[in-house]
Length: 167
Image (cartoon, rainbow, N blue to C red):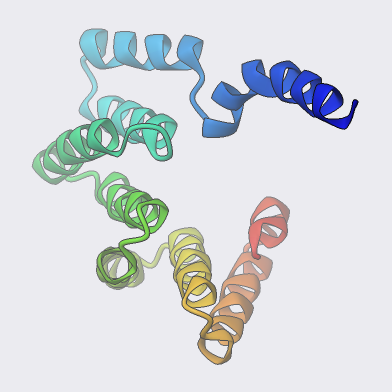
């Protein structure tokens, strides 16, 4: 009887697995169209980063492909924030693959670039991501100060969404 109930629950949840992976097919199609049709490089960089984000958990190879394109184009057109976002997202993809040293490398690089650009939002995001890697490594004495720094930066910008994201 319990097995039957568990099986029913499992079968009910199967359609939701795609959502858990974070991929939205309609959004992917829309972003691909923007990349093909936009004449504005910064718009393409943003679309490439968003596309990479869609694949961050389900297909890291595709995520890296889009991040490579975003980074190259961002550097060519001088889109500093787009470049920083690409580095930060690359760290997330590596974190999802449990390649924590690689994730930290890209978070460190993104933080330096965000600090140079004086982007408080990006610095906070990177610190939050870096802290999550430390938490995965069971380094809570390193993670807690990073979370606190991220929270303070988000607070300084009145970014309530960012404050909620600190975890």
